[in-house]
Length: 216
Image 1 (spheres, rainbow, N blue to C red):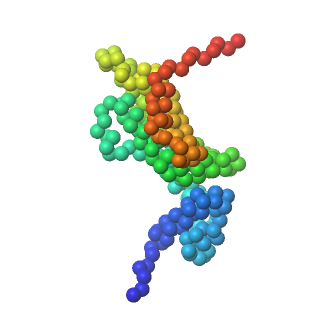
Image 2 (image 1 turned 135 degrees about the horizontal axis):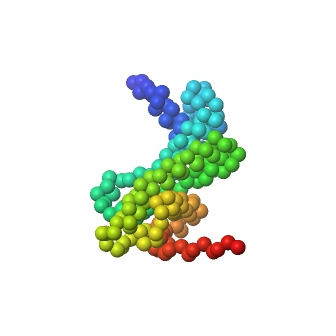
Image 3 (image 1 turned 45 degrees about the horizontal axis):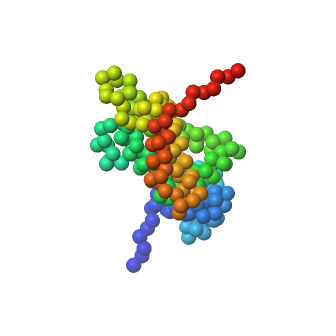
């Protein structure tokens, strides 16, 4: 009985999975069309049909890496939370757990970031993705700031509100914590503890930053 014919869309997806496997095992620099063909058990011509040049494959893989590391995902379970500070805490925990659960994603993100030092198109794409990630957190951060400004609202019970952070500052801090968590998972995947990182983030946000020293 003949095997099922694979659609071109499925074939392209298989090639991208093979590319991800090659890059995660050997690094982005080792990503060649022939290496991907060997890993995906397809001909070199099949890879060329979908990706005419190595740069096209690199760009497509970058899209996949950025989707895994710089797209804020709000689980449906969290949509029922009514407090903005509670939602921020839950988002931090969810993102820290998600990115640290498979450190390969963030390791490839770091490799592309390093490539961006030499290649402006990659640098611009990575920077834009991080901006979008911050924007996702900023929506929640702005709600926290609005609650803090409400004169009729009770005294904030949240470390985020009491820290007096601006929406932009809090969003940037949230991304720093999440990506810092992912970096620790890359460095020490067995010894890293997400809960400790979440607790440290909460303690840090509860403390106001000291004023900047006056410049002479």
